[in-house]
Each structure stands twice: as structure tokens, then as C-alpha cells.
Length: 447
Image 1 (tube, rainbow, N blue to C red):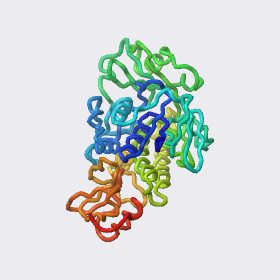
Image 2: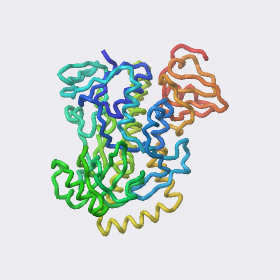
Image 3: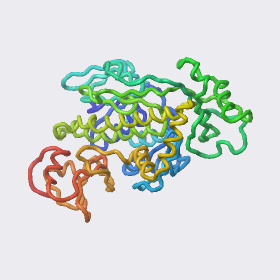
Image 4: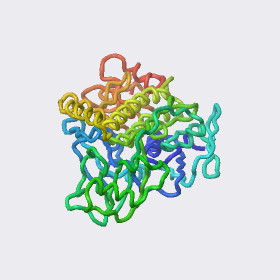
């Protein structure tokens, strides 16, 4: 029997499984689709996500598929310079989500069980039973990372409050039969207006259209090549012509978030926990960082050494982060509306973001580098442990915590959580910090 079932083999679910396996936990990943998807809703890794992937040895497998290194982010199309950010990676990586997922899945010990849509969830004091693909599976815990239309969320009746969509857009991958010279030759940051066009690989282009036609159509109406073509012509003139419509979907600016990320023995992560307008390159990154925060805490709970409240701190730490992203993306959505009042506000915001202090504050937020948790001192530079333990640098490690913390030499004493956050930086209080984050002593002495 696995220790944890993960529902959903997107980047969030796979990253959660990876973190759990790193810590020695047995995981079963269930995925409703019969084959790994080649469609990529997200196309950007923010600096903090790049740090996390690099620290775990995952970045090297992704780098061959990187299409661009963009030294900036954007706030509703307003460029936000990243070049002076405090990170080894002061840029966004332009890479298709499918390649990120594939790189993580390739490192899992247990294969993903596909064609296994979740249809029932039942839990008791000892665990969870998940029915998927006609089979029942039992585990101690379930992580629901099954997307914005989460079946697990629906089956549990978990409240998902927020705001409904006010406007509609479509996203599509297409080939082009013709286009004006110089258009979409390389990666550019999005700007205002409809008809965004971005080159992918293999002659494909990513298109985002949100004009008057999209506002009139029902959200369930199929996207046609003709509709996409009309949107591109409206944005770029008559010299552009659709070849083949490869994939398309409609989306809006709905913003919703679970009230609680934990429901008994079920924990939610990624889009299953929060949805928002996909602007500013936040969604994929928010899910990956949910996974990294949750993984080591759930592993500690499974292994029986989690201090009281550690698992619940996943909600306490990550819920405010996503709530802030929802505020940001809602604001960016308003700034993108082609309304005279919104255009006036956009002009003011653009001027404000030209002020270095304001620009830097927004850059830190978009990049994920500004994320801070109560009782945590910030991000650490030390590479994480390969086996999911914490890391103590430059100080004697009491043997009582040697099974949960790796000791390393170094000139500056510091204690780092498995997700790369600093929780002690010298002086008194080491034992207290070890107990608070890594559980009670086992035995005594020092290593």
C-alpha cells in the first residue's frame, strides 16, 4: 500500500510525488488522461521556480527545451526588469509546461498510473480510499493536484469561493500558412490588446485572442480555426493566415481559492486549490512551489516525526501566497480591458512602475523571490539535501536529529528547511529551531 496517493500528473502533482519520494515515502500517482499530454498551457518558469528545479537536479533535463531566457517579467503587459534580482537566475525561462512535467516524471521511482480518473474518495481516521479507473486504492493520505476542475474537490464538496469570469479569451496552438515578415520571429513579452502570437517549436505558434467575438460566444462553444484567424487578422492585418488548429481552449478571469487546503487526510495543491487569470506567468510556478512546500511536511507526517502543526503550516504558508497572486492577476485583468477608464488607470500604473522602488517590488513578487513565511528568515543559498532532509551548516548537529537533518561544514551557521528556507542563522536557539521544524529529539548527544 502506498503512503500517499497523488491525483494528477501535471507539474504540481509530479513535483509533489518527487518531493515525497526524495524523503523515502511510497507514492502512487493517478492520472485521468491515457497518455502524457503534449499540450502546454503554461510557458514560463519564474526565477524562484528555476532555483527550486536547479537545486533538485531537474533543470539540466529541461534546459534543452528552453526557447528563451527573458530578462524581464510583465504586469499586464507592462515590462518589469529582472536583471538586478537577488538570484542566480535573474530571468524567466520560456519553456513548454509539458517538458517540465516530463523532466520531473522521468525522475520518479514509481510509474504514473494513467487512464485513471478519480470517481470516488472516502476517508477515515486511518487513511483514504480512492477509486480511479475502476480500481480502488488505499493510502494514508491523498494529495489532490487534479487541476482547476478538480474531481477530488467536487467529490468532497469543498467550498471554492471567489469571483466568476467577467470576460473571455481563447488560447490556441496553430500552424500558420502565411504571416507578415518580422512578426513572431522570437519570444517577446505580451503587451496589451488581443492577438498575442508566440513561436513555439515544430512550426507551431501560441495564440491568445480576446476580442468582441469571444465575449459574445458561449464558454462551451468549440474554438474554430476561422475564429482564431479572425482574431489574428484583427490584431495583425490581412497578411496572416491560419494553417492548422492544433489545440484550443477558452478561459476567463475567474478567481477562486479553497478556504482550506487540508480536508482531513486530503490536501490540495496547484490549480485544484486556486484558479486565476493566466497572466504574468504565475500559475505553473505557484503550483510547483505549493508542491515543494507540501512535500517535505507530508513526508515528515508519514514518517512519524512531524512536530505538531507542521502539516497544517502548509495551508498557513501557502494560502496567503496564492491569495496575493489572485489579487495581482485580477488587477492585471482589469488593466487589460479595452475600456477608457481602464486605459487611464493603466497609464498611471505604467508611470508608477517606472519608479525603481515600485518596479523592484513588483519584480520580486512576480518572480516568486518575495515569498516570505512567518517565522522564516528568507531563502537560503545552500543546495537542498538529496534525500529530503533539512541542512545544518557550520554548527554541530545534535545526533537526536541526524535522521532528519544533514550536517555540512561552512563558515556561517545556518539551518535550512528541505524547501530551501532559512530558519536559524546562528546564536542561541538551534535546538528550539530543530524541534520546531523537524520534530522532537530521538536520543541525545551530538554528531
